[in-house]
Image (cartoon, rainbow, N blue to C red; front, side):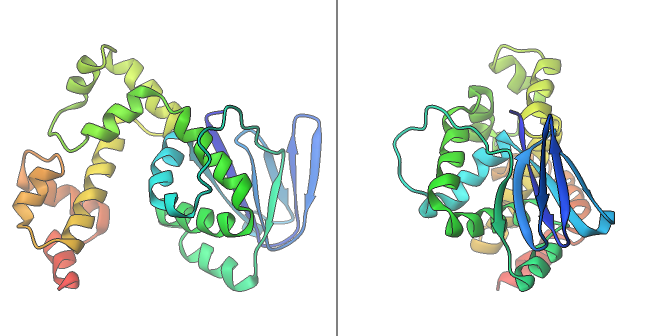
Length: 232
């Protein structure tokens, strides 16, 4: 299983997967297979997103304090439909987060852990334990200003295979993942430290300050100096 599909039903709908069919009431969060088909009276009646295993691995570190501390989960099978009720006010919050996938995922999993800690703890622990060593290596070394070719060489794989692994585990290429990871880390440093912006760019894996500023503006629609100003 490469990805989990999360569906927020604002109105009643249906999920179909292989020979199984599940009718879902309004105001429900559903975890299901990435291959499940979702339908309702109108496409506006639901929101869905795909959480890849690499993303779940990263998410684990964000919510680790909320997770049941089991040492190991040898096997985890996702229910055909794992359904969690959602109050109307929370539906509106999730809708507002729909343009920020990472924030939306984090919010949903924090909520789900509060509703069924055992099930969702096992899910995240399983993905952490079974994550590919390639992903762990990039997570550990993304702050080095290396191109994708350098990572591929260090891991003794070609760039094509490395990109395949990233599409499988993150839904994006290795280059795009590295850029997003570096920008996210840099933004956090701008908010929580007083380090110079040029130093943050270097510490986040950007060898060129101008390239960092350009990429940051495209991703967050503002300059690093604006984000820094909001933290003061």
